[in-house]
Image (cartoon, rainbow, N blue to C red):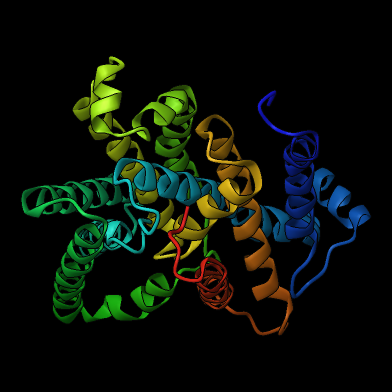
Length: 331
């Protein structure tokens, strides 16, 4: 925090307050609005309608958005650091697709085995990230190679997913929502099992984020400073896969959070990962909850999935970044 200018310090300290306000709005607003008094009544009276709305719909959805937003944003920050590529993100290079394939396999075996979905999504995301890294390393790990390897592997994963849906047609309807990205049917059990994996991973990232600054100096410099580069890269890839897999296991293939939010954090607070990583977590949670809130309220009682809102806003934001750089590199 001492490395930030005073205005940036104030902005960083305002993020938790902004997150609390967005969380409160997420609980109160929707097709059926709840006032603060009704929200308080729902907390006290388990027989009230407000209690059922709050604990069976709003609270799981809010907690799910909070966890998924922070996890995807930090996962994106890790991948951009490990792969030394500012265009890397869980959805761009296919990590989300790998997590989705793992979840789809579990859904085809037992749709109700929610406790296994985060683990399956993790292994799918991890294998995909390692495969992309291996292909890019063998062929020469340039920024373009990494993106092309991710696109190619992602298309293969999508083809395998389509084959599974062909053999299990009953999955097509639920997977259609899953592929867009949605928090509408999030349950507390899903969030609980995902949190078992995501929260320790987030804590681990916060403990090692200082060394991400060393890794950003380049492989040779980081090695000369005593950082075990290969082991450290593998650790960060595993953590990114855990976080992406946990979010995908119940939120579906939510895009743009992992790509754009780390950019937003670096633009606002600089490239020091000691600040940028926690800022990414806070901004990711705020962004996802806000987009979910917009999807619920803009056309109420009709609802847009959060993935649709994110695609519109995220696509526009990415175009803005490209135009702002005017051919320069993204930081």
